[in-house]
Length: 258
Image 1 (cartoon, rainbow, N blue to C red):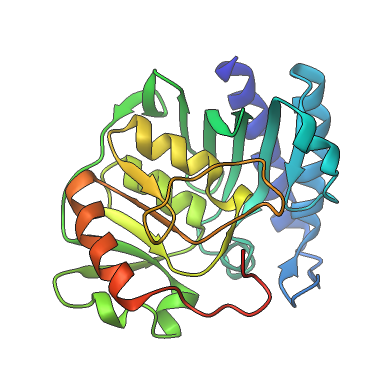
Image 2: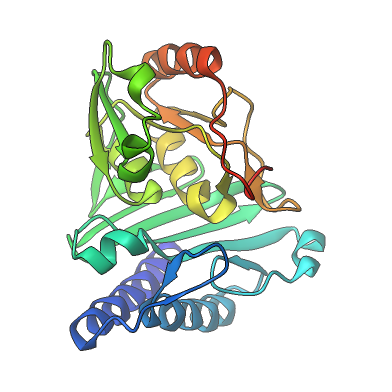
């Protein structure tokens, strides 16, 4: 099954790269977040191809939420282009994110960065791979952080004892954690399920720990489809980051509270 999902993700990546070459055609959606033609074209392609391959409920950033998904045992949870701001700026830190959830837990996760030609994937019980190479989390002092959140000062409490490195897409940051290229990543503001679902199985199958920002386990295909932030890290790093995150609490993100 994963090989076909890899092919479908690569097709979506080709659509995204072609759209960039042809022009971004950017508009603003609700909340003043940018959306491009690439987001919408990749979403339509993924929905058509994934549903033809393995029909299931559907939850995607660029599709209207059909609450009938809540009655489905299996649900595709998709972000066709996570890291749109980086995509617009030409920074190679965006990704196609695809997860298949069964009874609230991801059983398959894939994150494809078409700019770097990296494909990270995992199925429950198989481990995590990047372009065929098996991955493991790694303990270090490197904490991967959102540029926007870092600019707003949200990582100032974590400067001591950590090297904070800025990176784009949360999905891509979680993939890099699974590859040992950062000990962890943290967001103390609410996240959408499609932001973190695929990345959660990648990190877990690579030996890491994934929770919300305050340590609660993540469950998916909920109403509304939001989580109280995310913390994904190697085990010891997760304990250290969780202690610090609990001390400072959640960040205030009006309009996105779970």
